[in-house]
Image (tube, rainbow, N blue to C red):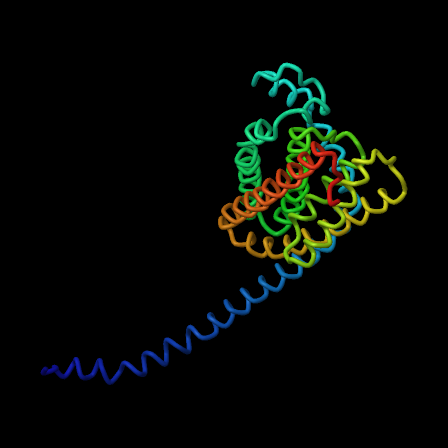
Amino acid sequence: MDLSGSEHGEIRALPKRLRTLRSSLGPRLSAAAAGASGRANATLDSAKLLSSVAEQALSGILSLINDISQETVWPERTFKKYRRRGYSTVVSCEDIGLLDVSVIDGAVSGLEARYAAVAAVEGGLTGGLSVLGPGALAACISADVVALIGLNLRAVGDYATHYGFDIGQPQERLYALHVLMLASSWSDASKELVLAELCAIAKQAAAKKTWAELEKHLAVKAAQQIAERLSIRLTKTMLARAVPFAGIVIGSGFNAFYTRKVCQEAPKLYRERFLLAQNGLASGS
């Protein structure tokens, strides 16, 4: 292919132009990279700080969140639900214990989807506020974790009531905390430890043992462990939510995922306790 003299000149001048362009863009790119690195480090530091603060705060108020959440579970509403289905004798948790387990399985179907949907909307709303800056993000994440835990504790209480367990009892509220802790466990070893504690609490509840210092100690321990595990998880999600607009998807997705995990663990545990109680056995015996 023949090239004109002007085209040859353009080609010979190209390396020089590239060097000029590189020299002019170099400082800008370096400054942009430094700025991005600085923002990432600042976000990481903020996330670590928030994680530590969240852990301390949650461990102190988790039992209170549990109490408030369980007060919103109205057993009478569940009793009416069974009566509408044709079981007119259900007026207490003890009456639920006389039902066939298949009746309860039908009554709780749909709870998982409902709670997961609420969690997704709440997580999406708080995740969307990441565009307002780091300060707003930190405040929203803190509010989000409290709301997420409260919603899931209520979900556990809802399942407990459907299977005939009185969530107003201190032992049952302690059990609910441990259900949440089981869902917050990310390894088989930690799950085994939590399951052992769940069995011990269920046995005490079945034996109608009184609320003692041991249970109070276990409640504090559960609160601390749940706070620690969730705060670690939140550190990772906060870093992801720091990306504008992506926080909506990430916040919504994580909350829905976690809530579904809770809503899958809870009915399995309460169903097992229900069947054991109908056969006159204590959980874990």
